[in-house]
Length: 137
Image (spheres, rainbow, N blue to C red):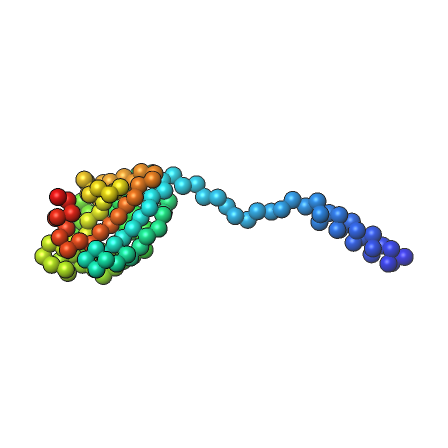
């Protein structure tokens, strides 16, 4: 009798297991603004960061640089922020005109990094240049 109860219980449990719906544990993240972000030392032709990242609307090119988790040194805040070093690479370390600049979609930034609001699909490149001024010409 005990064997019949045990066998019956197993059949009931097995039947329930077959009907169970699969549980998904992955959670899809909404991405308001997806941007390809790269940080490159053009003086040494070395890529420090290259990855697509998600941002909220109204985040800036400066926010994106800080999101890379590289060590960023800047002066000023917001629209007046100026990047002086990234990952230990300081302005003027490769010559008097060397420094950090950024470009969006293969064009030099036309406003400060703290002012440029990222747009979905942007390709943002932070660049260390031997001649930062020449990048804008």
